[in-house]
Image (tube, rainbow, N blue to C red; front, side):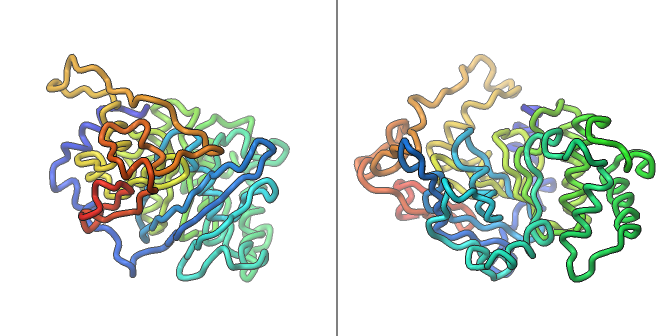
Length: 355
C-alpha cells in the first residue's frame, strides 16, 4: 500500500490544504451521471449480478476514487461506461450513463466509437500486457491519434510529431529516440507513462484509470500518481480512479465512492470518507488500515467478520447485513436506498433514513 501515513495526513490535514476538496459538484458541474446501472453475467452456474443498480456522479475536472475489494464490480463499472462488456456472457440490463447529457447506452455502435478513445479514454491494468509487443510505442500512439480523430485526423508525419510531444509531456526522457522503442525495452513505469500518453492523446473529458499503479514499486507509483494529477489540472480532465488501495485514494482523489457486492454504498468527499465514514462497511475499512498515529499504538487492527456473499446468490435485504455490527431488522428484509444525511454525503444504509 502506498504510504499508509498518507491516510493519517489526509484525515488530519490542515484546512488550508483541504480547500480544493470542499466543494462537491452541483448538477451543472456533473460530467457523468450514472443512474440505476445493472450489468449481469449469464453463466452455467447462474446469473452473476455484477452491478446491481449503481448510482454515481463524476464532477468536471475532479478525480473520483472508486474503491472496494476485488470482485466487487469496480472494473465491470468502468467497462460498462464504455460499453466494453462482452455479450454474451455479459449484458447491460438497465440504467443510464449520461455523459455530457447524452445517454451512452442509447448510442449505436458508430456513436459509441466516437466517444471511446476520444472523449472518454481508459488506462487498463498491467501496462506491460496492454501494449502490443510487436509495434513500437510511437506507432501505437500514432494509431490512437489517427483512429480517434476522424474529423481532423493528422497525417502520419503530424501524428509522429504529436506522439513525441505526448511522450515528452508524460516525462519520458529523450522522446525523439524512445518513440521507436518496443514495450519490452521500457520499464513498467515507463510503459504506464506510454499508456497515459495514449489515453490523453485526444484530450478526453474523462479518463478511466483501472488500477494504474498495480505491479509498480512504491516510488514509481508515487511518480505516476503525481503525473496524473498534474495532467488533470493542466488539461481539466476528470478522472475515475479504480483502485483497492486507500493510500492511493488519500493521496490523489477529491471524491470517493465505496463499492460492495456490485453497488455503491457510500459516496462523499475524500475528507468525509476518512474522517467521518457512515456506512458500516466503510467504517470497517477505515478501522482495518495500519496507522503510524502514536495515539493508536498497541491497538489491534480491526477485521470485518464473515465473508463477502457471492454475486450469484445475493442475500435478501442489505448485502452487508450478515457482517454488520449495526444491523437492524429492516436490513435483513429490504434492500436499502441511497440516502443523503448531509448535503454532499450519500450512503446506502437504513440507519440514515431520516438524515
